[in-house]
Amino acid sequence: MAEDLKVQIERAEEVWNTLQAKGDVIYLGTASCGIAAGIRQVSEAITEHLSTGDRDVELVEVGCIGMCCFEPMIYVQTGAKAPVVYGGLEPKDIPKLLDGVYGGDYENDHLLGVIGDGFDGLQSIYDHPMVAPQKRIITENAGLSDPVDIDHYLARGGFKGLERALSMTPDEVVDEVLRSGLRGRGGAGFPTGRKWALCRAAEGAPKYMICNADEGDPGAFMDRSILEGDPYRVIEGMIIAGYAIGCDEGIFYVRAEYPLAIERLEICMAEAEKRGFLGNNILGTDFSHQLTIKKGAGAFVCGEETALMASIEGKRGMPRPRPPFPAQKGLWGKPTNINNVKSVSSVPSILRAGADWYAAVGTDSTTGTAVFCITGKINHTGLIEVPMGITLKEIVEDIGGGVANGRSFKAVQTGGPSGGCLPADKLDLTVDFESLTAAGAIMGSGGMVVMDDENCMVDVAKFFISFTQYESCGKCPPCRIGTKKMKDLLEKITVGKGEDGDLETLERLASTVKAGSLCALGGTAPNPVLSTIRYFRDEYEAHIKDKVCPAKACRELIAYTIDAEKCTGCTLCARNCPTSCIEGETKEAHVIDTDACVKCGMCITSCRFDAVHKIDSPPSQCADEGQGGGD
Image (cartoon, rainbow, N blue to C red; front, side):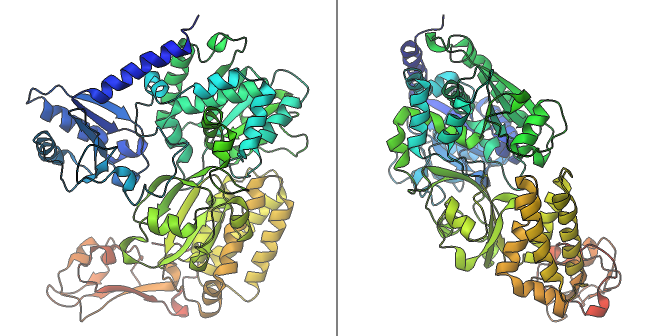
């Protein structure tokens, strides 16, 4: 029989407190973002440097704290003081940094802040502009503890929500989630407690609980980060949900492109079962629950519930008509409940702290927090968790640090490829389901892409409709044919071949696809097109009537030229040109052969004197064929 939870927590707190009191510890940010940025090489440099001294330093791997733009990151703990955070590191930075820290000098160009108190004059990481406006519930442990060490999770309040849930009846657990106001964070915003109640009340056995981690939106990595940084939280949420709806089997549907998330989930599931939190007679009760992992092949349509279930059953991932809904007839024809990673991850905190506590965060209609990935043309990219009701402006300007490279803000796209693009005059919108939907966007699963004045909104619409058209399963004609026709029209417009009436045709097609598609992929696919026409109609008209791209992003509507007065004849542009279409003598102004130019942009990138520019290409120079696209 598993040890008593109280005993486990006491031992876990001892393990955690020992680590906090240890003289020297270095925490390494080893989520996918940190690994991609080079934390493994930084770790090797740390090990090598420490080998030359006699300090007993423990290295501990943690997940992503959300400040992805500052990776690789380490937190250096000395003398039982709070860890000091450093970011943007390279292996060559380590000797000077560690010698300074161990010499009592914490100031460094890479310093970001302190996790906690204990240093005079050093800013808390929680006061950093990217972190201060956030409200961490789902991500409270991410980046602060070893994600696969169950004692770390227990010491920080882990499994206390499960303990309370098992002291209640399943109906009481459902009611607690209902009263919290939690709505599905996968995009639809359906009340989570109500969804559980429907599945619990459905006739038939066995019942199944599925966690949808099939994250396929371009620029989205919320689910991956949560699974990598705090897998025990998602496991605890799944067990509580299973208890509430009355099922003994749960399934994680995770895209196979997330190997680190899957690896950590597998480790944590095994450890949770070993310690009595999973498997038979959980925590000495009559409740038993098993968890398994199903790897998805990366089909975007499998984010839709019925397509996801078909994939688990070994069939082609294609949606089916509803009703019957999954709660009545789902996986293998049995009652099934499906929740997103963020929805599941909210549950342990709700059960631990109570429905009223959770409902006090956010707005009346949309309680709690939202986890977003902020990406694109912005200074601070990463994972953020904010209270519902925060404005887009606060996210973009305060947390995100404003638009990168001194450019002007143009639009923010929320909700992934199914979302909408909102202009500057909509930045005061509050982040909640109703406000975003009314503005022509959606909350979605949490992707947020910022665009500047160099982004062409027609090209952006083409990119997203191309994505959804490619990912369409092809089952229903409105989506299969309609998205293709929309993409063809947008390609025609971006190469300068648009005609009067094309905009009206686009709008009619979009309405047809929205109304007639079988599932949400087709039903929301036109959103980027409709929102860009709604807010940036002048850009469409410029492409169609004047044959120009105001953002100078569509290749067939631009040309490259060199300003003779600014060109110093350094030859860098010529040396970097892949088609050798730039001519000129050293120290003399150069010239671009526009007929040979492939408009790759290397000349602009390599020029140090701002001498190369994009100009409108006369209609006669527009390509007869081609699909356009930004640089």
